[in-house]
Image 1 (tube, one colour):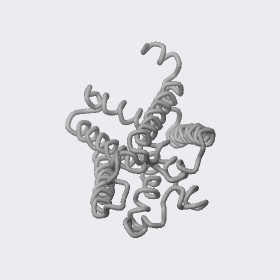
Image 2 (image 1 turned 45 degrees about the horizontal axis):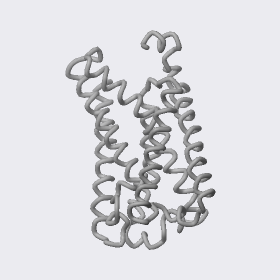
Image 3 (image 1 turned 120 degrees about the vertical axis):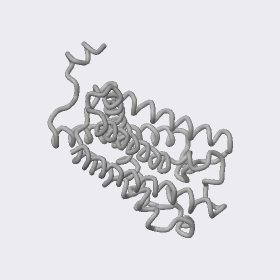
Image 4 (image 1 turned 180 degrees about the horizontal axis):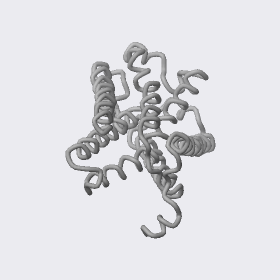
Length: 234
C-alpha cells in the first residue's frame, strides 16, 4: 500500500513541479507580465498555491519513502504525517478550492477584473487551466486516496486565518511599496469596498475548510482528535 501511495504521490509531485516550472518559464519570456514587477510571481495567490501544492506533495513523497524504508512508527514518519495532515487540512485544500472558485467566478463575471485578455498572448490556455483548474482534481485525489487527521477546528481555522492575514498584508505592502495592485479588481474598489472584498474572501474560505473536513470524514470516518485527547496533549 505504501508503495502504491509513493507512486501516486511521485506522479502528483511531478505534475506540480512541471506546472510551477512552466509558469516561471513562460511568464519570464514576456516583460508585459506582472512577474517582472515588484514582488514578482510571489504576489499572486495562484503561484503561491502552486508552490504550496508542490511542497505538500514533496512532503508526502518523503513520508512515503520513510514509511517504506523504516516504519510508520518512525519518529520522522510520525512528524511528517502530522505535518502533511495539518498542511492539507488548513491550507492546501481550502486555498486550492478558493483559487478555483474565486478565479472562475470573477472570470465569468468580468475577466478583466482578474485575468485581462492581454494575458492570452502570454499564457497559453493549457497553462491557465493548469494554474486555475487542475489544482482542484489534485486535492480531490488526495482526499479520496488518503485519510488525514484534521486538527481541532479552532487551531485549523486559526492557521487558515493567519495565512489569509499574511497574504492580505503582503498585497497591501506591494501596493504601498510599488503603487500597484496585484489584481485589477482592487483598483476599482474604494476603501469600504476593499474591506468588504477582503473580509468576504476569507469568509468564503471557511466553508471550504469544512467541506474538506466533511469529505475526509465521509470517505474515511472521523479522524479529528477528540477533546479528551487534545486536552491530554496540552
